Every structure is written in C-alpha cells, then in structure tokens.
Image 1 (cartoon, rainbow, N blue to C red):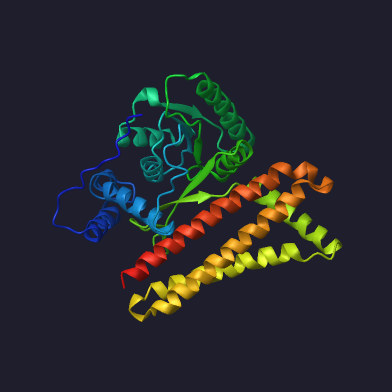
Image 2: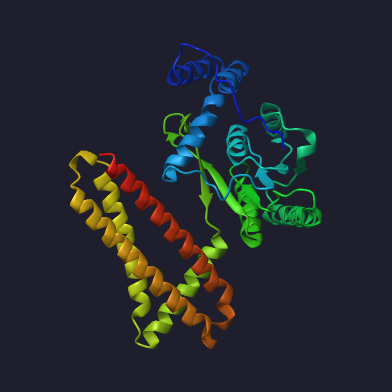
Length: 342
C-alpha cells in the first residue's frame, strides 16, 4: 500500500507553538470550522503533529515503537467528525494492504479528507456507510470483512511478507460505533488502538502535538484472565496452598524494583556503581524466580482436571508472562546502559 508517510514540514521561521497560536487566532477570527483555519492546520501543523505523535508513542513505550502493531496487513477505522486522528493512526500503523473505513452520512467528508491528505490509492481502501447508533451492525460489518480478509490471506501465495494481522482504531465516531468496533476486535482478537492526547480545558480540544497511539488490551482476554486468576486463588485457598499468592506478590516486587531503578537512573550523577549492579542483580534474581515459579505452577494447572477447560487461557497467561518478562529485561538493559554512561 502506497501511503504518504514522509512529510516536508513547511519551511518557516515560526516555531511549532507559534504556528499553533496563529491557527487558534484564525479560528477565533473566522470561526472554528473556517476554511482558512482548516487549511492552515492541514498545511502548517498536521505534518509536524504526525512526527510528534510517533515520538510521543515511543516515549510512552519506553523508547520503542509498538512493533507488534505496526504494519498489519489490514486496518479498520471508525470515522467521526475529526479526520486528524485517523491521519495520525494510519501514518503510524502503516497497514500493508487494505483499509476499511466505517463512516456515517455525516462523516463521509472526513473519510475523504483522510484519503486525500494521505493520498491513499482507491484500490487500497474500502468504505462502508454504517448506522452510527447500532453497535450490533458495526460488530457484524467488521466480522464479515475480517472473514473475507482471512480467506484472502489464506489464498494469497505470492506475498512472502503477509501476516494476516488486523488493527482496529475506534477513536472516531459515536460511542456505539466505538463499542461495536471494540466488541468485534475483542472477539476476533485483533489489535485495538486509540489516539489519545492531552486536552485543553479552555477549548475542550486536544492540545496539538500531544497526541499518541495507545494500544488497548483485549477486554475479553482481560476479563477471562481475571476470572481465571480468581479461580486459581480460590483453589489455592481451598488447598491452603499460598504458593500462587507468592507469585503474584513477587510480580509486584519486580515492578517496584524496576520503578526504583528508573528513578535512580534518571539522576545518573547521583548513582553509586555498587548500588546499581546490586539492585539490578536483585531485580534479575526476582525475575528469574518469578518466571520459574509461574511456569511450574501454570504447567501444574494444565494437567489438573479442574482446569481442563481453561487450557487456552492458561497458555495465554504463559504467553503474556513471557512478553512481560522480555519487556522487563529490556527495560533493565536500557537502564544499565544509561547508568554506564554516567
């Protein structure tokens, strides 16, 4: 898919903040939706906001991109009354093959604004008008398109980079549209994303340049795991076995240890080398013990008749734990690098 992803920021002696103020002045003089103000934003501000959004996203993710979300084969977006968040989302996610826009009669213009700004080829996107108040219809629309894409994915033998992944951005549109998109994404287990930002209390609008992409955890999975954890805890109490509680407590200890190290490393001039490596060694020891305990305990549950129907959820706990352990280890490596430069 050929999407405009590299932008030439307008050459100007004005800073980004100065351009934002000029844009706000235009809105005050000519109206918030005036052509002059909209065109000024599109030409002078939005290109730089795209870069800032990517930078903000990396900053919130410990300096890394959302690598498991970027470059899916397909992307689905609900379209609301602002086209800018969709521009930011598509620019960051960079879908490889197709985009599905779900719009209403009142928001079709913003779908066109996104397509025109990013110069998306007509063959690379699909547009469907939906009922803004029907969560069920939006849920069904997404599931049906997902099935078509999965069939296309399975039949495609020419693309060695295909991955079949789908990302859903539910930022735009009504609450019913967002709920329908989230419900569908949770059931078919796609990546769910949202464009967040800091809001200006005075204008009740996002502060330009503060936008970021937020990855939303699958609510169905969160509920299933929460319920399963409750069952595990109940079972452990019934057997007077507090082993599982030590695991969950150890995870909190690891989190606190990492946060303490983060605070230390944010002031490298105050670091004592002995303390750094002593703390890091202790934290890595906690991680190793937690990992070993968790794997042993969940493996034990996998063979238990009481949890025979929960195999998928238990395996998902292990997968999620593995991801978290890797993230912890990467954070510790980054912190060690910072400390080494001090």
